[in-house]
Image (cartoon, rainbow, N blue to C red; front, side):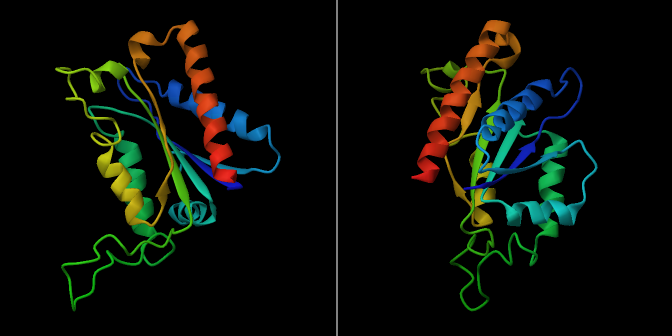
Length: 203
């Protein structure tokens, strides 16, 4: 896991300035830059996108790290467009070849046509919702985790391409709880997660 591709899915829209996800990307680059063994490429979905070059980044990488806020229980519209456009560009071009089925027996093997086998991905998300909204009985998400609930489809999307998931990290209560003190705690906890993740990847 030496080649790392980091995607910043944050964007400016309404009251969102995209600043927190930019900060998380900077924390990630800061962590990785302490070790000269890592090669790093980045993309910000608000930048001008060359679709073929983005496909090549996915093919090049050992690990893709996605940073995204969650808006109305989905990824932002520009990030969704980025995925739609880049993955479509990657059809028979490095990302996937088909849905995996054959016309002989079309009922089986759906989702096995990916071309990104051997690569892993990690997802970070940022929420206004507190962590307790996902864990406490009677609260909004019915005791369903981020990964098994709202982001279930995102994980299936990556599995479709052949990538393997590593444990991600979710920032909660970012709007109401983003005090200077909590930002320090966010960074400390996220850095610990990165340390453990990369230790496991190298073992």
